[in-house]
Image 1 (tube, rainbow, N blue to C red):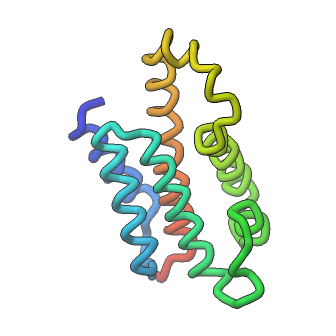
Image 2 (image 1 turned 30 degrees about the horizontal axis):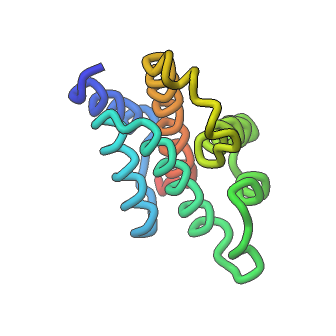
Length: 145
């Protein structure tokens, strides 16, 4: 996929998912933009991380802004949100995948990464596409019509 095709993918998602208006915090807007730029630039892991950060920021802004929930993890934010159960399941899958990259427990076990970097690049690309779509589904989940 070229950079132009990646932007077209995001634009198609916007057309498919956005029917009205949404109110987003500045943090969420910044993180979502960064996730999209990273995706279109080929920085797929960065895109996954920024997408998850945008989701967390939005869930805190939209549903959980009181002091009792400030220390909630992304897991708790997802579980206690009003999002559709299928979207929650997808977010958990993405969160678990992200955790494998963020919390590398066996850093010396890198032979597969060295031997098959194209496999991991392709996998990261596919997960990044899912992360962008899921991020937009969350951001557009409470539309003004």
